Structures are given as C-alpha cells and as structure tokens.
Image (cartoon, rainbow, N blue to C red; front, top):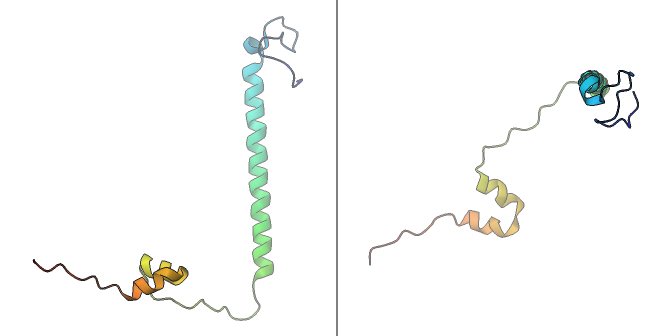
Length: 100
C-alpha cells in the first residue's frame, strides 16, 4: 500500500471505489496489529535488557541493606534541604493567644 493515498482517492485494489469505502478500515486494522506487535517486541526486548542488567549488577558478597531512617514529617524533610527553614523547624512552638 502506498503511503500517499488519500481517503477520497481511488482504492489501490482497482475496484473503482473510493479508498475510504473499500480498504481504509482493513488497512487501519492491519497497521494497528503491526503497531501492537512492535510494542510487544519492544517491551520484551526492554525486559530482557533489564534482566541482563540485574544479573550483571548483583554483588558476589552478602547484600547490605540501607540504614533505616526515622520517620519524619514533611516539614522536617524539607527543613533538611532548605537552609532558611532549618531555624523555623527548631522553633516549632507557636505562642498561644492569651485573652486580652
């Protein structure tokens, strides 16, 4: 099938019908199947590469687990990253309003 066939051009099969009435739907289904197969093949290749990478990256010795951190609230996490919040997080006590 030529890629420059328009919807209103005569069909490539020679039936005399417009392409959109004759082979458009069939060609679209065929193209969709080809794209699905290509996507499956690409996913399969990516999975194989990932498995090969995992096999090569495994250390020969015992596995070391990362240290467990204390659970922190979002404010403390941000305070460690942003300098101007470090002082605020240490002064977390907010004075209460006294009647007046």
